[in-house]
Length: 260
Image (tube, rainbow, N blue to C red; front, side, top):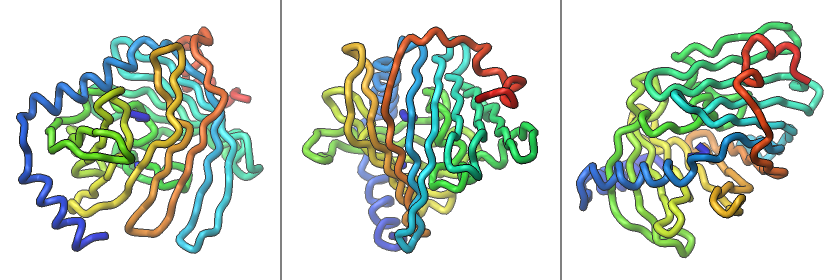
């Protein structure tokens, strides 16, 4: 699931929570189908532009390279490398997603020439000043949530399941993620993130889905809006390639300092 108002929305949240019309088994079935349909991609690379918008509309951009290796016994391995601007050039983020418990995450800071481990207690914090948290950057493994089917809904002309993803990890920054999944292709279309106080925090929308290798769907644009701060981050993906021959050696934290 790549892996993103208070008084009124809280009322809406309570209404949704009491309108469950199917068992938890249905929520798990839907989430499992999302997961199953993306299995077998092997590895991917892509480029990305990260655009940061403050509450006044000012913006800065960063160019990034991404690599992902599909997990086998554990979750996916991912590597994010910043190329521009100059103040973040060479910064690299490595994540080893776990199916249970906190992920293993490291950040290489070239100015300090050291690799910093991201503590589990900090994974709810903002990733490189964006509206995405460190926990959002990792792959969203099936075992990390409890699921509940809420209702059917129409979103952008698509018939969608609305499923509640309840994080199992108690150190998560979220109490719930309400997720819109289109019925036809089981692609995540929108996610509403609720903070630990159960107030709406952020909304993530996915746009421009394209199909690769006649099976794997990838969105061109992720837009995360923080409703509590007025800030926004847009991720624009391009140059997707599959089956690049990546191995676990390409995702070794000891090699972070040598990444170019």
